Length: 132
Image (cartoon, rainbow, N blue to C red; front, side, top):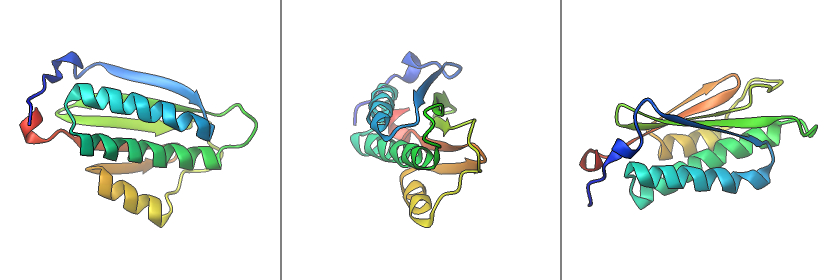
């Protein structure tokens, strides 16, 4: 495995993007996460895990958003102590986010940590020891 220099993404640097909560924008977020994850040194399998986790949370948010067209998802990505931290949520959500059992199982299997908050989900994927 090739060693990657994660210095291209400073630990105190975060990237944020707001997108309309429509399922059609899930691909945009997957592409962004995959690109930044590749820059950080994740393996292809880990990139697939990240994309699946983001897609799962975004789809859940989109399915539960009112169809008024005013709700947006905020995605925040940062590197924190050798881990990729992704926060994805809808601050205007009318009800707390709840993961169904299948979503919880998926997130548990593809992330190192996930935490559900009332308006979003925090995902953590650690860089493998050999890539840091």
